[in-house]
Image 1 (cartoon, rainbow, N blue to C red):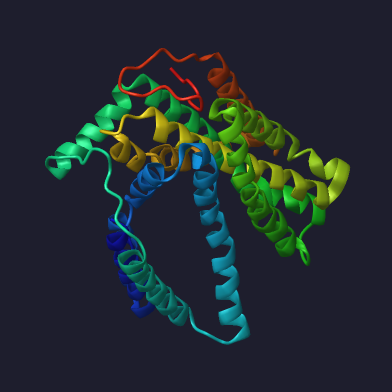
Image 2 (image 1 turned 90 degrees about the horizontal axis):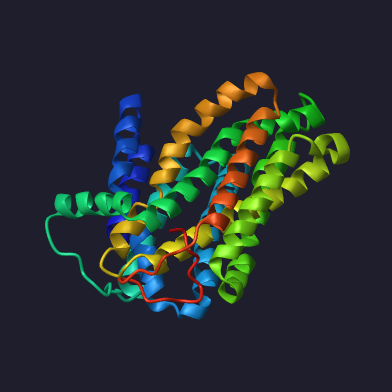
Length: 336
């Protein structure tokens, strides 16, 4: 699965490098759909090879790798383009080569991890069964709902972060660097804090950490539009660091819970669907934000914070009933 995704990614980047017409770009982007689906496989593989006592730490490190790549990649591309005069096509070509390198690394630098229970059957049947399993399992539904709430809160407020920065520095010189500090550097710093939170989850349990991360995220969102009034750009960046750490920690705790809660027979299939809440929130969140912002710039942040607070209350109030298909574990968090 990882090899397939890396090679498809290489084809996408190569298509972008060779594109001379808009439809060339459109076709290349459409191929991304064939690249998706390996996140669940990677998470399931991590679950199978990682000692239980370090699962939270390892998955948190895995979760932080994305924000690191998102931050470093554009920076390197900017250096190549502005500093060395490269073209966009050249940058995409290098990306294609790196993707091929990833495929080679997976092929020769890692061993295949077979799941405890290998799914059998037709692809469409397995895909339908995975969706049905998510919808019919109360525990998994609860985890997905909390994950969706977290993404929804983030997506409805994120488009307005640059506007909040503008209220501090104004238009003109300094605006771009201010946005980069709050939306880029601070977010990266926050994501890098999540492995420490994952290690804490291994010690005290994933449910308490999830509740804490939801509460911290709610507080950060509510404070974000107020921060410029009391501490300027520096305080706003600090709040952004805390928010990014909270959101990364929420993701890590959700991954941990699913990797333990779901039976081995359905683990890979369920984890493959783990980003469905993200896709849904990416559509619904900005739409809600666009509606509530008419009440004021702080409204999307306030509604997002209230959503995270409601999620924390829901996790706190839900108690697990014993399940026959999962071995009890002290790290289990109980969203039944």
